[in-house]
Each structure stands twice: as C-alpha cells, then as structure tokens.
Length: 285
Image (cartoon, rainbow, N blue to C red; front, side):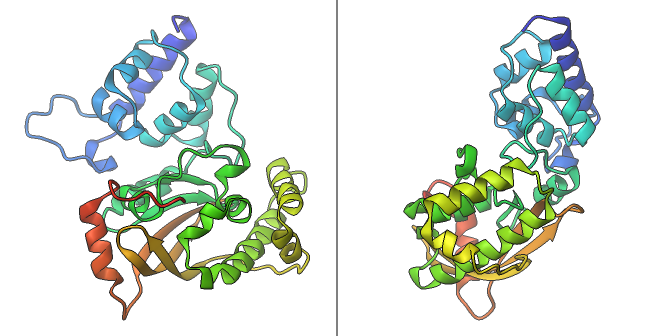
C-alpha cells in the first residue's frame, strides 16, 4: 500500500487490538503473556487471515484490504459503526451497503456470539443475509460466507436454488416458504421505501419465482421471532431444534441460536455435532 493513509490504517488497527483483552473475545490467556491486548496472530485468527497478511496490513506495506477482510477485522476488533467507517475510508474502500454480507455487526451481538460456544448461533440481517457464524452453526447449517449479491440472502436462494431446500424436510417446505415471505414483507415495510436492496431483491424474486410471486400477492405479514425447525444434516440425520432470536434496536440484525427441542434425540446429536465440528458438514446453506 505504502501511503500515509495506509500507515494510519495500520496504526489504527494496532491501537484497536491493544485495547481488547483476550478474554473479551473468547481467547485463553497464558501465564507468560507480554502484551495487555491482542497479539497480531490472534487478530489474524479471529479475522480468518494469515498472520503474514495481517502483519503487512498493520505495517501499511501490503496490498489494499478487500471489503470482506475489512468487515472481518471490524468484527474481530469489536469496532463501533464510526470506527468501522473510518477503517473503510483509510483503506480507500466504499462503505458497504447496509444489510449486505459485509454489514457491520453490532459489537454487543458479536460479544454474545463469542460467548455462545456450546450452541449453534449466527447473526443475520432482516433480509436473511448471514453476517457471521460460530463454528457450531457452520457445522449445523454449512458455511454461508461465500455468497454474493442477492444469493447472499437465504430467502433468495430458497426460492431460486433447489439445493437450498435440502436443509429442511420436503414436508416442511410449504410452511417455510410462507414464513419466509411473511417475514420479508415485514422487513421491507420496516425499511425506507427507497431502500434499493430490499426493492431489487423482491422484484427479482417476483420475476424468477412463481411460488414467491403467488405468496407475495397474499400480503401475509409476520416477523419470525422464534421457530421450531427440523433440519437435515448430512451426517447426523434429522435434528429438531428451537430457533430463538434476539433483534438489534433497529430490527435489521438478528442473533439466532439453536437449542434441542425437548422430547427428541437432538440434544445428543448437537453434542455429537460439537465433536465432529465442521469437517463433516457440507450441507448447502
């Protein structure tokens, strides 16, 4: 990078990591720790980057960080919205669209997600774009970080990609479709009428999916606050879980966590999920 602006970017990242205690982000501290905050290798681990790459960013000597990497660093370092915007401007990147896959996750939600180590959990937008998942959510639902554009929305994939429907038993598909559309209508109404992301998503779905268009014309509205789901897992089979939701103040982000449904064998299966981790999970999200 090599400009004064990028040098400032590195200094800013260093100042942010030095203020965070390892235990604040779920890391275990050793007896010989020499720094009060996070080490460079710990930031790299949290952001899913190589240590060498992060070192180059902090020195202001590497390539221009991508929007995806900046979003990961903002989450790893628990940046506020203002700090996140400052980071993007130092990196000469446009601020991501609100509600997209690179949206800023509220630090409080990130903190809660970090502490939910024994249950699958993830943060999504009101348009069902997954922003961040813990390892158990990846193991249960598949890694959802690779989708871009409208495909980043699970609702969009539900109506346009048959592979997305393998997540739920076929007998549940009609119910899921109605629930998704009713929830999306509530989310669109809550947003500004000029919100381009919601409007183009709905318009594209109406064009591409006759099923969606028919359901949209029914004008059903219902925010999805909690749900009991049956989830197909490629290794563990059918799991019955309760999906609980915590909303951000503006309703645009949701922390979802999954607990075993009482009276089923899903508790044992979720314990096994923690053992096998993500290695056996190739479920299309």
